[in-house]
Image 1 (tube, helix red, strand yellow):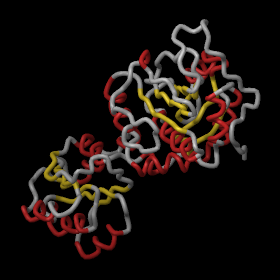
Image 2 (image 1 turned 45 degrees about the vertical axis):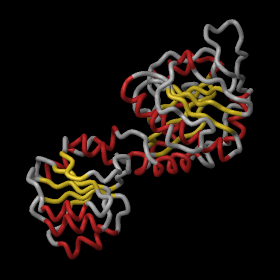
Image 3 (image 1 turned 45 degrees about the horizontal axis):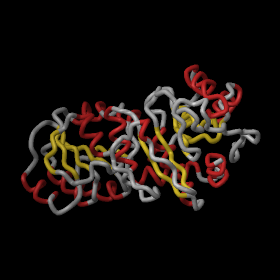
Image 4 (image 1 turned 120 degrees about the horizontal axis):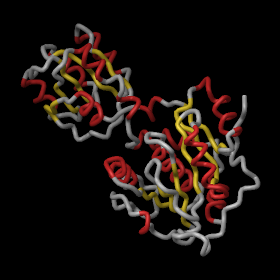
Length: 329
């Protein structure tokens, strides 16, 4: 197996930011680029930020761009205490990026397909195997390319993806394998995927849901079964009050009541004493489950559980201190 260790580019050079660039940025600015959406740039940004902070480097996370994705990512960056300069929670125009303070690295996540910042070293984020667009983006950067980080790599494809990156001149820095936490949706994403009505808001819309459980016929076996799963959504028909209560009692992230009819008022009364979000889906349980099939492929990065998983995925694969020194020149 090909072992990827630290920075694989001993001859890496970061170009001087001089008059040849239209909009030079701080030497200690790292841009994260991708050729397509949902490549994992936010995952990599948070993982690098946490890694730099653990190595004693001050770091700031910044999101440029427009649209819903940029707004959500900027809000995500504002949640993490690793950053030395807390984000305002709003995207920053590319021509108004903050200058890095002494000893600080500014990590800038750009929109997929955005024009790279002139003069700033870059990491290209690739989802799985590289595409022609990924190769073209990397080639366009020239000496500004520090390397690539591949995300969502299937366990059996690690060697093949590493070879493809190397053969394509994409300078692989690390591969992040498929991870159930990183792929998991939040409560709000489950709500939106189902078009569900909120019966009780548990104030946990960003909580990660790793498992979806279909409630059994009876409540007695349900409780020990539910307790086996830490972060879960439970699907149960509207007329199964005992199963609803079991889901709330075992602290499900969300309870999805199926069949389109309101549950017993007792269920909502009990929910007020816990943190479980209660949703009402119009479809029956099998159709509701089918409606969730795509949400694991499109979930966005949010929450502390994903931050910890992202850092763990890069820890041991990257020398954060050495990478920070390259960025800082």
